[in-house]
Image (cartoon, rainbow, N blue to C red; front, top):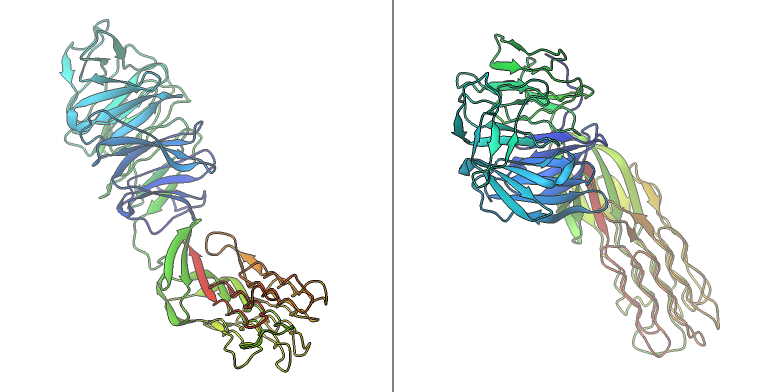
Length: 578
């Protein structure tokens, strides 16, 4: 069977297993990158990442939203939660002695019973969760009531894949080819047994040929030795390196049939119902892959053929991951570089300038104070096209009140490529130094002069955010989201304007809050800094210095009765889907 690629996803390294769950998403064991990931139904983005090393198989419970993970090299089976509410919590770890296990699955419709292919110990392990007990099965025999086949007793030989149906039947695939049959599994320590049988005939066989790369069997469920195992809740996810693939089919007739073909696999089939599952063996490939499908499933194929397209990837800044995005964060003040090393695509960019400092009077406590510093301007752009190359990054510093320019100092601009965020204006003082315009404007000092205008506009294709500072007696600095409020004589100095909320860092965060104004004469209530790192103003005879804006938010500094608070430094964040 051949077909065209519907969806594909790059960036995996030696993936060895994948399933599609009922919500349409895919869960993939990304073996080479030491993680399990969840992808959207269109394979366009990663929605979950669980770091784990050495995973060779996992089984998913739709009802309980849990993963049963086989970690071969650590000789353990681990059960973790896999829901949006509770993701990645380990809730059970096997405690019996295993030797290089290759598969563990829940019993069909019963997560309280688990079967494990303990490959290195040549045995099957059954775990009963309710009784917290293990049973070890080391050999099997043919059902004595079946006289159509030779009666023999044999040990397991490198069991590799296993599945237990709701009626107790167990289907086992042994790792290396040798003639075997469907047997009654019998515990080495108990006379009780569980029969493995076909759903509609008294006997059937599972054959494995050492001369072929794969073998298959179809009964109530069918399994291929190309490491394929069916799950009642899974759809098909297969991979091929050419347009040719092989498949295992189901028969709906009531009588047993057998057939051979000139493909790379040999098979025997027994009758099965239309609701049974089929296994799609992968075509020749250097990697181990598993295909899972049902009669109503949708097949997704990816190709390993070479392509000139490569996924977007870059270096620079502090790198983190969240919600399917790779995130580059630049916090250090000064020049830097964002370098795209491969691919092309779209990025989201947040650029925040440094906040202006608050106003104040150097060295003398007087009855009049300074206005709040304006927040650094903020520019946001989504879906910005980008290709391989280097892009300049500059993070602006916050303005620092220096005692000479007693109204304060403006913040510095932040720049990414052609996007410029304008530094915040500083607050005014109580006499001759006025507040200034900036990305967001500084607030009036007690003298009531200057410009409170927020000048940040759109820049480089991005949307700009900035607002005016407050007037009156010690007004608040403007914020990226709202204006600074006016100071009121005998009541309260102005509050800094609030910033804007942005989640490019992976968590919703406010940036660009204005600084609060200092208390003035009889005003006993200082102005509050705005959301997004704005510093509070000082209180008369209590806090002579305004609070500084928070670093890497672009917050304005608080106005001071003596000295103004420094503005917070800026930040640049770039993210893109992986």
